[in-house]
Picture 1: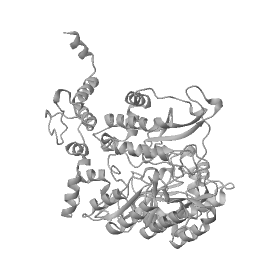
Picture 2: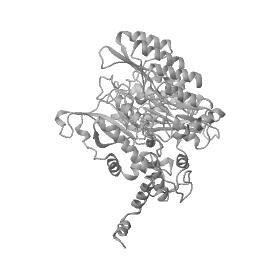
Picture 3: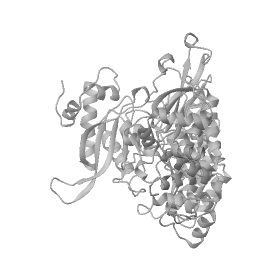
Picture 4: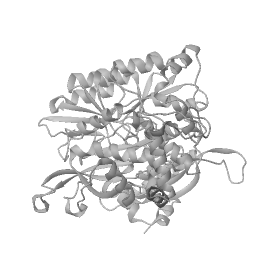
Length: 601
């Protein structure tokens, strides 16, 4: 045996498979392993490939070489790259047809979601980095929603916009008209990096450590200009939190960046005093996990390239056989953080700097009421107003009214939040009464002491096939039932989510509601929409997964249950104690006693 042969024998099976996949992905040797999908449909097919898709093909090849079987979605992505489907999308529209099979997934790469059977129509989701949109574009979205959709929009839990009820004939019209407004839909759904979120008060927050607007914009354009960052094993979320008064919920993302300050007394040659970003990984609260601090601390200019390296490692090693295990969390669970970060450092090209989180200045806790009502900006004499949008819905005439207000009294800037509402910024203090009057005329409010101010709800069964309940309808019913009976002096977040995907993040709400089908009455065969109830969820410095309070509650019994719970809170809290602190101070059995109408000592 030659020395070269001996060296090959010394390689582990994993290493040999990796090298084979690398050679194939790079076009070396001119062969390509098969995956059971198109473009190399069977084992042994040969066809060289290169370019930005090679990293995905190599990952698929390694999966098959290791004995795995690609799921049908991976086969579909291999057969035809979804970003090359524009002609298909236009041709279907001309025929008045919706996509079928795996084409439903691939069409989401263009921001078009066929949402049957909930609605026999498309939903279009946009990409608004940092949730910021100019008033002219906001007005333009209203025009598109009137011409091609249902005449309304939804603000999402990623500080984004969606329009619904788009007919089969209109997706290309919607996408191109949005592009004319400067709004991109590419990669807003399916197996891609979703809308980049950031602090909604970036640049105007008197308490912020860092203005995250440029970081969100840079990350947004980095993704748009790197085709290889599309078609991941599953979706991927990135957020920047500048440390201000409104949280961007960075710790609920796959990659979260949290601004921190290093004071002079803690500074070193490697870390001079100033603002940095802590790297957090693996958030997916629907699966019960917050992103965890990695110990890595980065200069602002390092954040985007490090995030890109993280995504590339996920592309190469994320699960492509089981969609239920294809999120970053599961790769971290499998490998551990140390191994994953080693791969990221190799991809990035240098070691990532560590700094003890305890040596950073404590961050302020985001305020629960800062996304609604009137608040001072860092700019002297200016205010922003947080406008309540119950369950995120806004009619097109209201959109035009908001755009007019932002132009007449502000800077023409509208800021969307992960709390499904919006902010109008840069309003002179003397103009705020006129702004409030104009909002009331549009049937909108800024008042923070209502149940509606804290409602967060996913699309629900009216527009999502996965949802077990009409979350938006039930949320409004809860508000209508409770607002005349309870007088709150601070907002309480009630999150309603329709399924285990937890788009409304029920686990981090003060009160979280997860939809399910329940018996209409004990022993009955008739099933109705209902909810499991969780309490005491939190985020940021108060990050906690909500605890189970009640299960299988029919939706029409929820208002009474929540009324008893909130009355108990108002009656027995200590001073101006928040609901979060109240819920965490009590054992679940004590809270259950309140729900059952018992007095808790």
